[in-house]
Length: 398
Image (cartoon, rainbow, N blue to C red; front, side, top):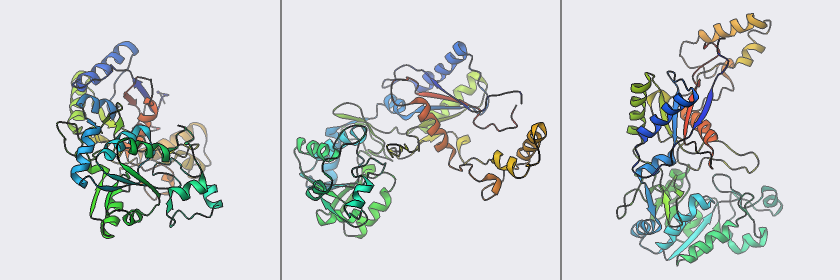
């Protein structure tokens, strides 16, 4: 082996992005600056990724509380609406809820328990078992919830989300009734008009509600899926993937990103002579082992990517080969045997073979997007562009 580094993920600093900025020029310029100042040497099949936040900012893809309220009012008629299965987040949902409440007379807020979809807990599992509550069948009123579990604060934010969301709804002039249930059909006892706010289970939720007699059913992906009074929008995901921008606006998930990644790829080929893959990434798909929070609050990890990032890994497990096929070898003889085995791969799928077990055959965009999200962080690193080298290398690559 002449090269010791395998996969390397690097955060590139960039200017603060504003609406109207040319991301093709900014991303390309940041890479050229890294080449000049830090010796970055692009290679074919490197990966360049941009966080979805800078794409949406450059697009100016924002919506206000009033825009959301107008859309909700138009779709539900301004009366009582069941708002079910929202995630518990000041950043992700609170501003959306303000707009939803402003467009309704009353909100029946139905929260899943013991946690929301991405793992923010309202109730401790052990306490729930101790109280004899069955989350698969029991429907709890707010009064019963308080009686059993008291006032639970989120371990990271210190917020009582039941109180926080209720107060927020009232501040916007709507009545509120809180219910705890995990069967979406439970809300139909209170109203036939339902806005389901779950992310990854939304299609099933809609199907169950409609089959059970709901009259108006919209998902969060169908709110702000068209421009309201000149606002931003996202035709595919609506409010899903949005983040708080100000106290009265949300930044929506970026739209129409495919041309952007293809234009950046073409520009990088022009200025570096290398064929680099390009993607936009949002939340990574991983779970925090302490807080039990699953990170993926965006509808997808990557809304756009160049064709070379399509597919899943097709890898052999080196430790399996070392412990089984080549258990009697060591040193250079073992290295050469493993290299030969890798070189014999013909591109056909290795799924189901013992030597490929545990090689995580998830989509490349989900794996690389998670790597990017962990590299860029969510705070003040100032590296919204990620440059990855060696991701498609293997043990035989020089």
